[in-house]
Image (tube, rainbow, N blue to C red; front, side, top):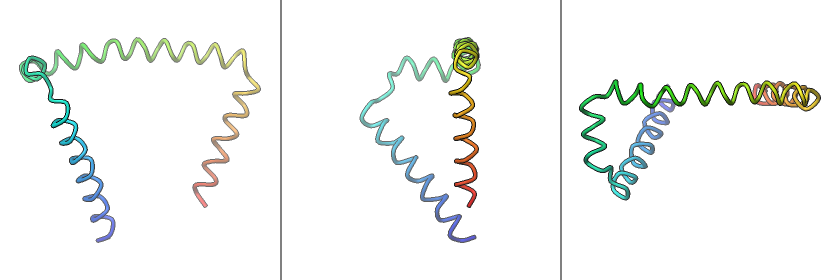
Length: 89
């Protein structure tokens, strides 16, 4: 239990250190941070909408590719199942 907590704290500290380094090397322009802090829900909704559109487009493309390459899709599914069994043991 104590080891898990230590590993979690180490991981969180590493991510925080990386973010701090990124902020020091590439500071966020003040207008962007002010805009996000002023209306965070509007900014989130303006980002989520194009992401949903792109996700739907990629899903449609994957469905078309799946239908044209069904043998490869079966091989991919089998590979994922085998990888799951390998990781479990």
